[in-house]
Image (cartoon, rainbow over all chains, first blue to last red):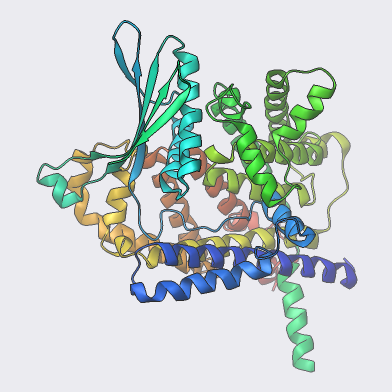
Amino acid sequence: MPLSKKRVYLAGLALQLLLIITVSSRDTFWLLSKSKTIFPESCKKFWRRSEQIASTPLGQRLPPSNPVRQILTGYLHLSGIEIGYGFFAPNIPNSYKLVFELRFPDGRVEYKLPRVSNAASVLRVATLLDMIGRTRSEAFRQTMVKMLADSMWREHADATMIRAIFGSVVLPSAAEFEQGKRESYEFLYAYDFNVTEKSSQQSTP
Amino acid sequence: MKRLSAWRERLIDFCFPAESDTWLAVLRIGLGLDVVLYALSLRDDWNYFLAGTGHGLISRNLGEAILSLESHLVPTLGWLVNLGTHIGLHEETVLGVAWICLLVSSCGVLIGLASRFSAILAWFLHLCAAKSGGFVSYGVDNFMTIGLFYLMLSPLPDQYSLDWRLRKSESRDPQLVGFWRRVLQLHLCIIYFFSGLAKCLGSGWWDGSNIWRALIRPPFNIIDPETLVRWKYLFPVSGIFICLLEIGYPVFIWSSKTRKIWLISICAMHAGIGLAMGMYLFAFIIIILNVAAFGPGLIRTDLRTYQLGTVGKALIN
């Protein structure tokens, strides 16, 4: 292979590795700024600033329509390197659960979970619930829960009201488990969807 | 100046080792099988996860709209649905055809038939599905995109593919084959370093509580907690072991003395996670990437297939 060709490949490799390291650093700083870690709380401001600095070479601070940002972000997605690798880190949060309470004209009440066909799909729905649980945007959360309630309604068209109850699954420690404590369900939000009014109401604890 | 020149030569030697394409065959077959399993696992929920507003679990359109704010260049199933609409095809039909094409292309990757085309098609369709279903995507989708991206750029076909047997293709430049292996190896080192670093920063990995939480957290709680709690004394050891294994990967995977033990340990860790937490596809893809990157060359018979690579040189000398 000619040297000139090798140089082109090397430049490509350098750029690829630089992007992977920058994205990974940015997401690690983000984790540090949001989570409880071995560092003191006072460091969080520093991590936030570091995350912003790491976002700059990725074009994340440019306007969304900027072509450089569009191309860079597009490439990150195409090569699968748009997110970092902080799996199950630094700590493992509680998981979330969504239960639908369906009320029927004859007075029946049924409780349902989002339907999927196999264990692989259950993992995907869990990812979705984590996203709904972690978002800070109430509008986004409500939109997502409404869509999930809609899908439930399509399967139970005769229901007159659906209440979507969103909660967090609180896990006991190993020591607590030995003392008899089991996982519990902590209520976070509830949304009522009425078939006649086609409206929703929210309640929180 | 001389030192700079020597350093440059060493860098080029490192990045372009002459290698056999055994690793590429491992990557191709492993990814092909992984995409087949991915497609089959989603067979019944494909339309349910990826349909537009008012037809599925959540709206594909919302995910695509959010993604388009980030970049218009990322392919989505919406592109294909729009294309299908122009020729009078319903959304459901287009999604069904996309699933069939993904399955067929992954079989093509698996057996090495039209290797390059199959790899590009599998990458494109998987990416469309992963991005359109961004709300229900997780780590496995990222690793599949990474693997398929490198596979389609690598010098296909490899000598174990059907293409090779049918067309008697010319041998690929061994240095180019070695270059793409290096890319994958370096990428994995970065992945493990940052994954290990992030774990080390949380106190729960040092006292083992994160192991316990990971194993009892729904939907990963496939082992009865009553059984798990009997092994609680092993959790801190396991937590520290995982942290050290991951953060030490970029160092110990390169040395011929520690490579085998590190590779076996990391694969065993992923197999354990896959079995204990039900993350079979995730475990499979990451094991394939590891074995493709660092596996070939570990056993002596395989070393003979190297010609001018670093390991081969050691044998010749």
